[in-house]
Amino acid sequence: MHFRKKIIVVGILQYSKCCAIGNRRQRLRYLGVELALGALLPLAFWRLGVDDFPAAVPFIMLLSIIFLTDLDAFIIPDRTSLGGTGLGLVFAALETPGLPDLQKALLGGIGGFALIYSIRALYRLWRRRDGMGFGDVKLMAMLGVWLGPFSLLPILFAASMAGAVFGIVMILQAQNRQTSEPAQLPFGCFLVPAALGWLLFVPHALAA
Image 1 (cartoon, rainbow, N blue to C red):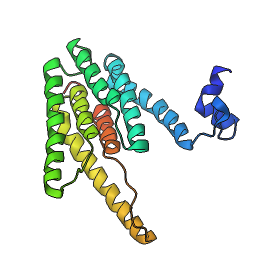
Image 2: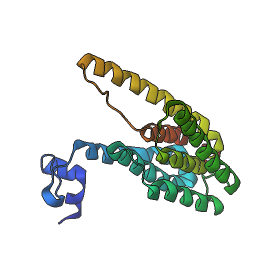
Image 3: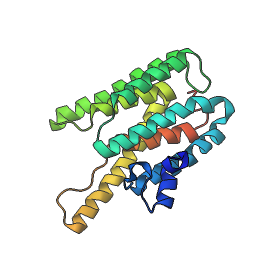
């Protein structure tokens, strides 16, 4: 099979929304993923520059995997969150351009873990049930390692505001449609865009 037929964009265009791999029908979302990454990586190169861009590539790819997995299965695999945390610490120890130094990376990781863990524990004491999964705790630790401790509160605030707006819209739609349960979206799907926004649009974000 020619390599280009394995590309979902080509499969959808050439086979009427069917991918050439196994002749299975692919959802248009996968086309959106390829197009989004195709736009995100050049944008990152433009915003971060030649020196900082290489370190951002694995971070962006990990966040993309986390977003899609959490969206599909409401789970964040440890191999991405914990693996990404370990990789970020290695890069920080090697003084890779674009990342915090090792001290700030460790502080960011510990701070990110403690921040979400505390919120999760307090919510559980208040409501007697979990408000977010433990995967979000490990994801926030990963973000703290890669982006530094000063990124944590802005990312959490942006994700919380976006989640609140989404929740209100879904509740209103459920009431209009007279359905019992509004649509849900895991919190990791708000943390990821907030982290990407910090990375790409906050000056010197990786060095924070």
